[in-house]
Image (cartoon, rainbow, N blue to C red; front, side):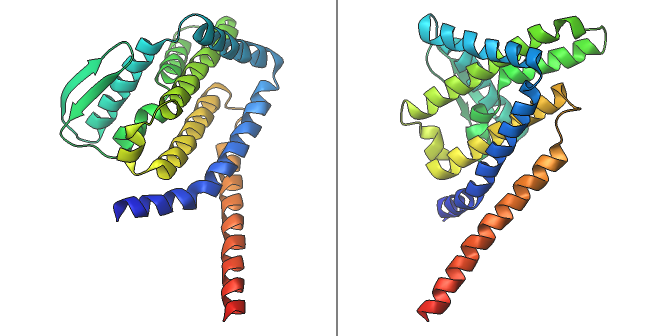
Length: 228
């Protein structure tokens, strides 16, 4: 029953995920419209992709971040951690119980992006870090590519049991997409507060979602009336 409920939630949020993607793309294009920011961010993405596919796939750093995020999410949800293992290509976290948030957290929490952003913001409280802004944007691009490429690889190159454990593939993928987009927008808001408007983006997503479901419901009602 719970799995069926999660399937329905995933389907209901599917239009929301589409409109959130569109708004995130709009925000990202607005941010990258600043040439220096665009060059630095894209350079970070390209450099990571080149290293990943050409020299070293960063599997151990990803496994470490993945399992630590599982563990942190479990602690935040009140779960008791029994054991943590981090290997070269795989790892695990044993706990007394879990939920969808704990299971899916590593797939939408870009640990290294958040860590780099926090260090940047904290450093800015004590000194002028403006001269290093482009370097930081390069690091953010590098870490963002790391998270997306590793997440895609983990989810789709093998039958990932986490998706089934969280409530099914449709629910899990929709939630992962939504959460990743939300985290990216929040990071962009922290970096470019004058460019990113969360209120406007939220209104656009809500309006688009409501309109889609209004069309779908009206269509179903019309078909039902005609059939009767």
